[in-house]
Length: 136
Image 1 (cartoon, rainbow, N blue to C red):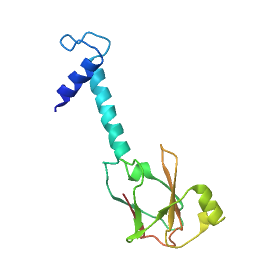
Image 2: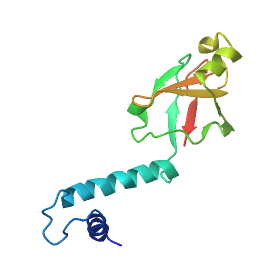
Image 3: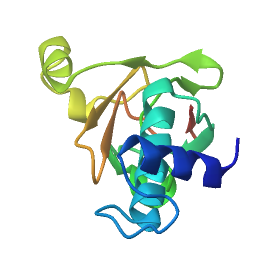
Image 4: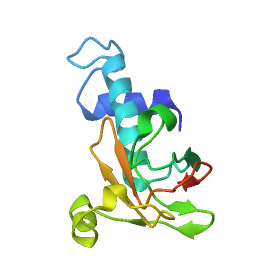
């Protein structure tokens, strides 16, 4: 099935005259709607999957992911040296350790805050540079 076929079927379903395209919806409107629907489907089904590395700084808690991971949607898996890093909410990190933002060690958990831009927090923070997370 081609894009043209999908667009024609969409316009027919909306009751538009596909021969003249002089109704309320244009071919461009139908194309924009189809593109939006496809992106939304990809987001819902998570059929877009990519693994990237995020270099962690020494003692750094918060990271802005849009600059590093330009096609960021949401984390599926996070690992450090093959070991799983578990997800957490900020409230869970506060309950676990009141000084979690200053705790050094091997990363054990991560949390996301916001959608655009995304802030990504790591608990525990490496004491030296050279550690990186593999984010899928």
